[in-house]
Structure formats: structure tokens, C-alpha cells
Length: 124
Image (cartoon, rainbow, N blue to C red; front, side):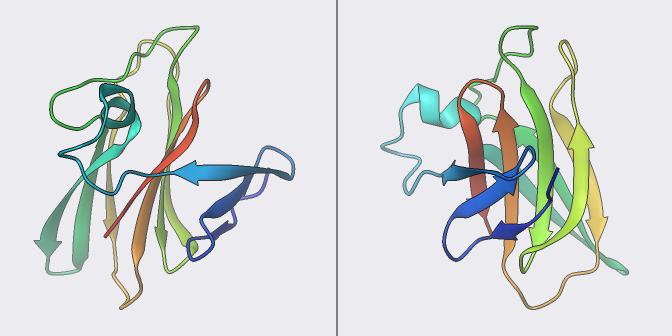
């Protein structure tokens, strides 16, 4: 498994070299419920040692299912393309995670993998 990401070209490498497109939404006001339930919801909190990044899956109160058949498998946080946090989930786990990171001046990308609908990303 590879943890590399290229946020400039919007592709990531996962599962033994299989390259997948990363999905994101431009405008939450015009997004479909399908897009909203897959996109990471990110909250930032300033800490003396850096930032706390809180992530849940789904925007505007539209939750993603966590069943055997359809689930968020992981959430990953990248700072400038470097993996700085990961949380793994199984069926019935709530896809929510917090990461304490020392921020650089680079862009933060938060990605979530849905086993049926691929990788969804939010950028900060």
C-alpha cells in the first residue's frame, strides 16, 4: 500500500499502486446529497503546539453509512502532500477522527475513502 498523494494533480496512489481519481466539490450550496455525504467535514482548532484537525464524513448533516456493504474505510490528512495522520474504520465505526499536527505553510488536504465511491477530499 502506498500513502503518496499529489494534491496539485488531484490523484492519489492507494491499494498496491492502483491510481484513483480524487473527488471534491466546489460549492456546497449546489452539491448533491451524494457529494455531501462523501466529503470530509473539517474543523480546525488552534493549539499552542500546532493545530487540532477534527474530521467527520458528511456535510450539512448528511451522514455517510457505516455498514458491511458501504463504509468509509479511512481518513487521511496530508500537509503539503506529506501524510501526517490516518484513522481506519470498520463497519459500525463512526467515521470521526482528530489529528494534532504541526502546521507548515503548505496546503492541508483531508481525504476519505468510501469502499464503493472512491476517494473524497477537502482542502484547507
